[in-house]
Length: 142
Image (cartoon, rainbow, N blue to C red; front, side):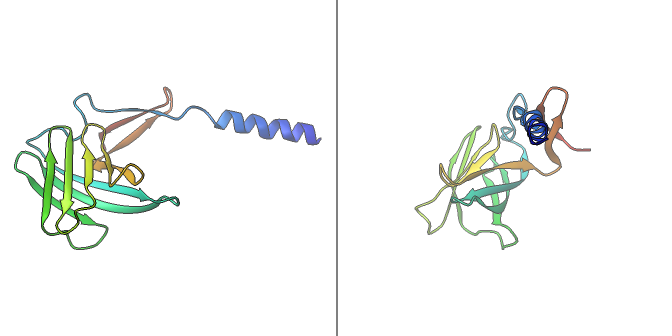
């Protein structure tokens, strides 16, 4: 009886532990249009415990307009755009020369360092799972 139970549990584990879904990004990248104003919800996971902190980032790369805040706090003031290209936006808060917030626009990755990182999604958009081909597609939500 114990062997049968062990086989059933093992079978369920193996069936449920498939390959992770493949993310399919937009052909031109997620946030690469230099003339569009993006309104993003982002997060960064910090430390060994991966504590999550939410951020809200609104920007237009062409106009160098940036509004940035953490969780429900007031927006940060005196934000310096350290780097602004089609594929990268790097911000620095005044008085904090040690850290740079970086948005990798093509795939939506957002972080503070190699070990403190997360992702962003645009308001009204999200990742939609397709069970048939085990993919996640980034698209506008209905």
